[in-house]
Amino acid sequence: MELRLYNTFSRKKENFKPIKDNQVGLYTCGPTVYDFSHIGNFRTFIFEDLLKRWLVHLGYKVNHIMNITDLDDKTIKKAKEEGVDLKELTDRYTSHFMEDLKWLKILPADNYPRATEYIDRMIDMIQTLLDKNYAYKENDGSVYFNISSFKKYGNLAKLDLKGQKRTKRINDDEYDKDSPQDFALWKGWKEADGDNVWKAPWGKGRPGWHVECSVMSIDTLGENFDIHCGGVDNIFPHHENEIAQSECSTGKPFVNYWLHSEFLMVDGGKMSKSLGNYYKIEDLKNMNFSAESIRYQLLSGHYRTKILFSFNKKHESDKIIRRLTDFYLLLYENKPIKSLGKSLPGTYLEFKKAMNDDLNTPRALGIFFDWMKTESKKIKDNLSNTEEISSAWNFLKVFNSIFDFIELNRQEVPENIAAMLEIRKEARRNKDWAYSDQIRESIFNEGWLVEDTPDGQKLKKA
Ligand code: AMP
Ligand code: ZN
Image (cartoon, rainbow, N blue to C red; front, side):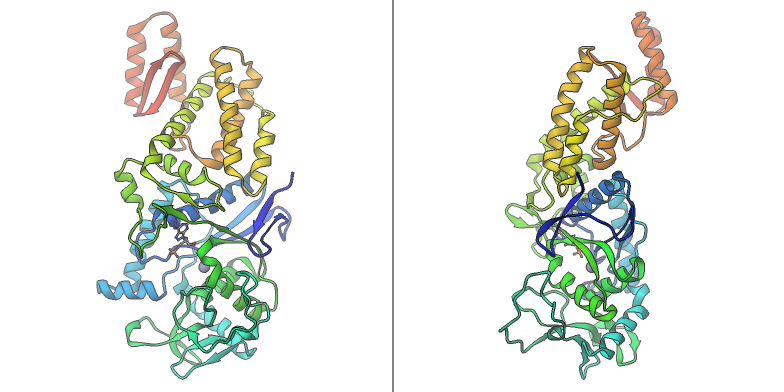
């Protein structure tokens, strides 16, 4: 039951084997900080978070790097439009991004390198590519990568370059795979760049977007590392170009596993800033979405299928989150005080198998929810023994360490509140309603709300 991951490079599911035992180097292309990230971007970031959490659950030590693209065509253009320094703009949106990550319960990366901090290293890589004749200079001070100098160019995106006559080169960072062209490693200075300019031996200018990720990933994870992720739109040209630059400059294979998540759609179209059909986290908060409900919508579809984000699905996902939270509280109330042990129910193995099969979340969630339904009934009917409840509790903890769907802000109920609940339970058993109300009041003053239901006391954050 090994972990198998779909490698975009081979278009196959492959057994996952890291370079160093028990350690994984993971690079995920981060946000371009010229504006707020939208929920489509967060689909990709939440998929990467899921992958990381699952690797950690399997016992790997993950070194996760997410870059911050704080220098490219879009950031420069926006700073100019606003009449502010590039740094002022990118600092602002980096901090919004960090707040959104935290709110969505995405675990922080180990390092967030920013492109502007690595310019010297980018100049080194471009110089190496020039020295090895993979790149050439143009009169305006730009440097281009010659894609016909790299035999493997197009292998990731599965392009057939043979017979294609190429007459152009491209200075823009983004273009589609119908027009593979020599691309800019370095962009000679233009007036529109203002003072966003650096000196290189061949002329002043700034790096292209693709070389930024090659340098930041190699610098933080080494010349050959385990996993590189992004959304499907990153396959071409961004990741194709990263492979070309990295492998030609180091002479070594670059990445062992390429993983890409599919698009998040709205009303049949790709959610994107240019189409204007996107939701920011702020918009979703105003629509009363909880982080857990969003996580459920994004993770209940497999990462390699398109999913539709919609307000209509909110009701359904809220209901599922409520059920899970109720189950958590039911188990919490019934869990033995001591000796929880590490046992897990048999269903965990089925769940693990589904997750190990290229993170098959729809199947894993189905397995968990079926089990939860049965288990919940058994507990309510007093048919579960201590051992069973312990392993159910352990399974729920594992489940939540991966999905983070339970609406308690990842906060365990504090010991003192748990003790008060116990006393209150006793008071209610003795029909001492006045004392029970008094304890409820004290619990409320500590920030928790107790509700009495046919299944016992339920606790929620006040
Ligand atoms: P950007 O901030 O534009 O550099 O994008 C950050 C990440 O979001 C990249 O990995 C993109 O592939 C990904 N992305 C952009 N739009 C979508 C979408 N609609 N669905 C899923 N991922 C997306
Ligand atoms: Zn990148």
